[in-house]
Amino acid sequence: MAFEGLADRLQETMKKLTGKGKVSEQDVKEMTREVRLALLEADVNFKVVKDFVKRVKERAIGQEVMESLTPGQQVIKVVKEELTDLMGGEQSKIAVSDRSPTVIMMVGLQGAGKTTTTGKLANLLRKKHNRKPLLVAADIYRPAAINQLETIGRQLDIPVFAMGTDANPVDIANQAIAKAKEDHHDYVIIDTAGRLHVDENLMDELQQIKTNVKPDEVFLVVDAMTGQDAVNVAESFDEQLDISGVVLTKLDGDTRGGAALSIKAVTNKPIKFAGMGEKLDELEQFHPERMASRILGMGDVLSLIEKAQENVDEKKMKDLESKMRSASFTFDDFLDQMAQVKNMGPLEDLLGMIPGANKMKGLKNVQLDEKQLVHVEAIIQSMTKKERQDPNLMNASRKKRIAKGSGRPVSEVNRLLKQFDEMKKMMKQMTNSQSGKKGKKGKG
Ligand code: GDP
View 1 (tube, protein in one colour):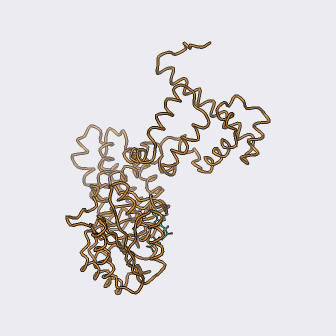
View 2: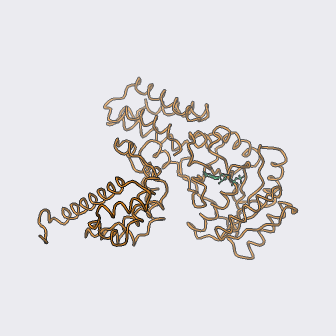
View 3: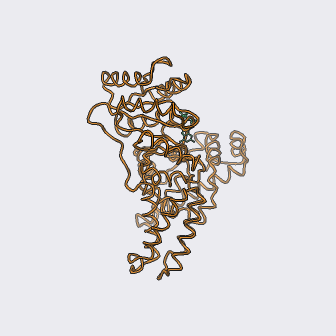
């Protein structure tokens, strides 16, 4: 996950303050020094760090902390608020125009993820906001770019307006908008040309499109992995085009996070979305407060709940719950449950959203190897239907067959059977204690 190093260091620093009955100026000094180093190491812009530390220091040795009953907690609160502010404060919404359609212009350097993000954004607008977007291929220099957008459009079943490479981008945009009106699209998302570097020709072209089309939003797509470069790119694009927001891509990688923490402060333009993977549903609205909370290890329960609501089939979960209660949970149910959790994204990311999860020693050492899940799946899939329903059938020759079928050692099959057995016992205990029938079983 992004921010990992920064998160570890900040959490380490904050831990020293938790529960402190008194916070001296010396404590604050030490804390801010560590925060400063952690931010610089995460590749946050030097000036941004300086201002940030200054604000935290002022507030931390100010009244709100010193006169508080829990000064340690109070300092942490200050850091969280300032981090939130740094990334943009309130979560900013996407424009909805009075006229229809709302026009969004996507700009950015080649390779930043512009075309992918154009598709992702359309997908998100349709899925979450019930909108009917039209995509527009306005990169006339690279036929491959037009093809790429068309492929994405087909994958999503969202129409793409293209006029090939001979038309002028301004004409393409204007005709696309006319077409969108005709076909009752409420959003038009224009994928413009990119270059390897910021150059004058590109900026001229983008300015022309902007002046003619008057988009409601100009989103700059930048690659979070490029750190300070991303910030510089954002600064130049903003100077020339007065962008309305930033989409930060590749935040799923091991970026140090400096771009996310500097862009708002340097350009004063909000980060609106974050790209969290290559797939077309991996775009998230950027919530500064939730992100600050994740960085400080306070979890992000809201995002977790939203993810669950989006990806988990509620009825299935209810069924599973009742099966657990009646202890009739089988390996088939287990597979089902795994599939639901997998839908929600990488386990590691999910753990990052649970408050304090990263502080639990046991959890930190758990190998979050997604491969293991695949192995478990393979083992269960190598069982017969009967075996899945009734693990008691298992004997040595069955285990051997399952091991062979799944390509895993018998010891692993045994381990899974044992874990499953323990899980069922635990469910039984929980159900019994909940219904107050502890120790009194109907059947003997
Ligand atoms: P463009 O040249 O700016 O249009 O960039 P593309 O949309 O072609 O993207 C360049 C590469 O980055 C592609 O391989 C994308 O799959 C990848 N990419 C885009 N967004 C993300 C993201 O959020 N996470 C990851 N991991 N890869 C991304």
